[in-house]
Length: 409
Image 1: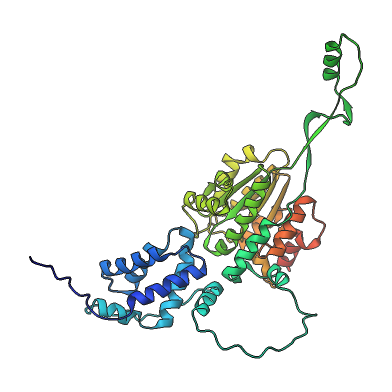
Image 2: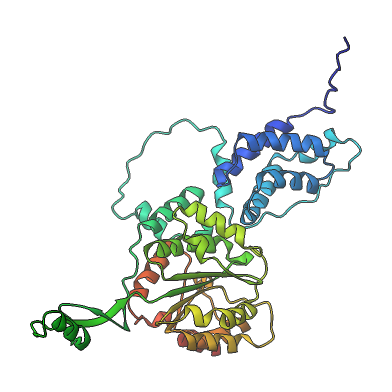
């Protein structure tokens, strides 16, 4: 009986062990990576026979990344981890001796706090140092620090705590009076039709006056969210806030736009937040791409404004205002949107910078057509937004005319 001898793998090294550590890093940074993904990654690298850094990255990306928005985090982890080890080219050369190693350095991207924390978790812990008593009366609590921290600089644990804080956040209690009537024993008006009908059913004797009052409802909230590459870190957290609003009341419409407009309200109505965001990611094709604000607003004004902007709707425009197309139509689309709603609030993460000035042409075209200009880059700003939705703003800091005067100086 002939037994087939399995060929031994060419070259030596610790490639499988390093792929295992890389998978642990991705899991610690927030990606859903399990043991099965690591095994598949090792087998895929062996089967593909990669000969360059780009091929190796593409092979791991195909196994570890399941959603479009996870690519940014994966690229940062890949650049940090394999540059830190410094022998990726050597491992590739062991697998394919004829390949020339690519030694070009990859510049790491900013906002890699979660990855740095995940890398630090693999290091051996030092011996406990002697405790030192400190007076913490004048220090800030962890909750206060979390309230003021930028979303893009949060670690994976801080983002999880921020999502829990959003789930407990007190939602706006805004109400508007509609033109519809409903029966009310303490209503402000008498309903003559119901009064006469009740009298006829009782033999014609007018024994009781039926009263009515106006129907009071929460006004609709329509969110237009930018999902371009510069807004990714903030849009993910803001979608948790919108899911909380959608779960509390049904009259919330959510649209995402990058290079095109996508209606994702039905996906966000899922009870589980993870399932809702997974459906949103599957229905959007231009995540972390470019930005075409004017074209997206034109599509909304033409196809959706009459359907969703009735009964005193409030529009939340979530974008940095950095328009790619300069055809001059952005001001006209913003004016039409402003006239179609009761209140237009622009939420811009760029306001996190103290020296921000509206110098960009897109920002200057949009500012004259908004009612409020607010920052949205931390939990405190989301709480301010929830309070502002309950009542009109009186603070001068959110007045767009103030920012226009600064730009004219």
